[in-house]
Image (cartoon, rainbow, N blue to C red; front, side, top):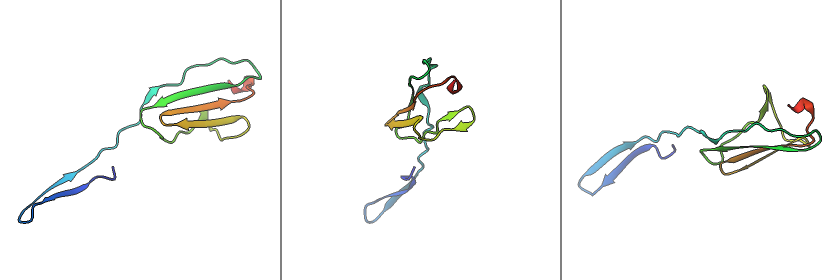
Length: 93
């Protein structure tokens, strides 16, 4: 998007100008989250893949935003975002 501007081709005696408008591509899910089952006390990893690398991801449980802690770990590499939930309990369902 930062490349949007007016560009000029200059040959000295004449110029030609054109305006470039770069439209932002919407971010889509290439791979959506899948339902998981885990035994109490174990850990579970939720993974989704995005169409645009390094897109900021906000993880939520219901309407509550999750933050990195001993319980939750977030990883993101390129288009893949992961949430690791440690020591799962029935309340984590």
